[in-house]
Image (cartoon, rainbow, N blue to C red; front, side, top):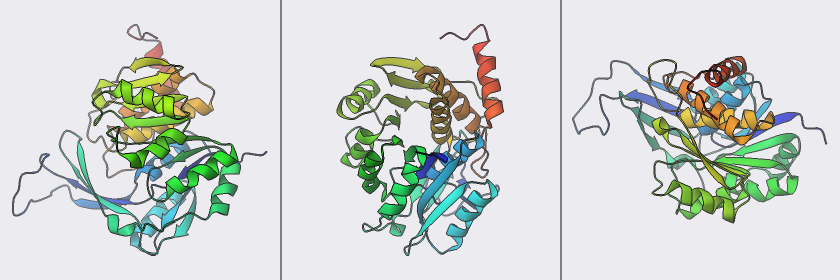
Length: 308
């Protein structure tokens, strides 16, 4: 079967309004003056993963529901400007949106507008099936209505990845995604015992690799039953925003996997891309390119401090 798409990204399209605040948590006050401005820009989890994959040279297709509204226009423009194929299913409730409060240290607090999601939202099954059958891999966001696509993807015989974000290891909403994916990404921020959660994902599902990202502490990789600590990579410039670091990690990891690299090297790719993302303000959509990624990885591997 011909696979004309390297990675199909399902869900996660939307618009964020970025507000740089003096500190987080933000103390109560009647008002704050925001000298840096308040900017609405396209780019939520699926958009950023698609951008990262495309920047690394992978043929990327993005499918999600979009409204006929200004936010939808921003999402369409982002994909058009970066040459990413987008299939937009009409969403009467409107395009997903959120407000991100970003502190001076790069941490963020996100406020999601759930009024733009309906329980009855679905992707057309024939569209999902046709795109999956023409793709080498599918990355599934945990946004509505992606859970309903998981049986279709399994029938299509395509490998799957997902990002559980700040899952606590117990919320049942995340479990279908965790157990249906070949590669699972999760933030360690809300996990009391990352290794235990990672091993449970592998035991109950079909994951060949589970990655728990831990910010400045690096990441944990579970592959072939072995847990490995992946050290953090020093960012090439000052850290200004952690928004998008996990998406960049996932995109670079998948790039390595689709290139035939072993899991540990895929994780190194992810660490380098994630460190780069922390140096990019949330008001910009800038992904690390393939040549620059490989150059930085080669530099790390040739340094005396690097050890496998």
